[in-house]
Length: 195
Image 1 (tube, helix red, strand yellow):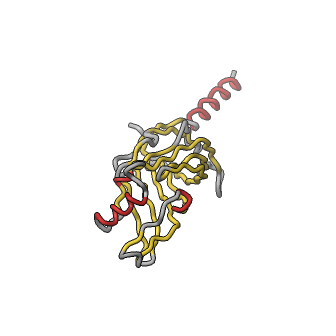
Image 2: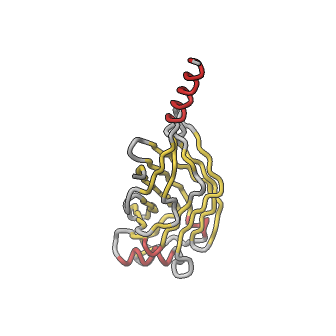
Image 3: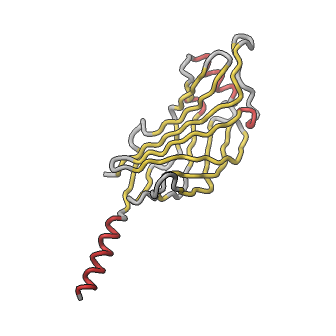
């Protein structure tokens, strides 16, 4: 009888220790996506203010595993702000063919969790389609995540080349300032426990 009670107690403790927690996106600042690059004059960054189609809720257990049904996001090109005024923003929209292709879309088709430097999973590897300026390419994206008591943060970056998407790097001052081909997309999603 004592051994049966002990086994039940152990099972209860194990299930409790593996409790599932639902996380929701923190607030309007909980999602940050930007594109960084450089030019012959200076480095630049364009920050997106309108992001949609990302998971608003995720669940995780305190052993570190996150449950994903799908992952992706959509960025409205018109919302990209280069921080240097309307002229630069107009060049961004023109280069990304925003009139015909208003969104940048990433849709993951494969998602796996990995452990790096410890016992708890902390890396997300995904493969999916990235649509940019009317062209779609399969890309591999790696992100790190931190699962704490009060928040879950998923962040990462993906180096790309504009030419892979048929984008001509923008220029200014009659070609004297030339944007370089290489860019990096940075992203961060911050979640908090659902109350």
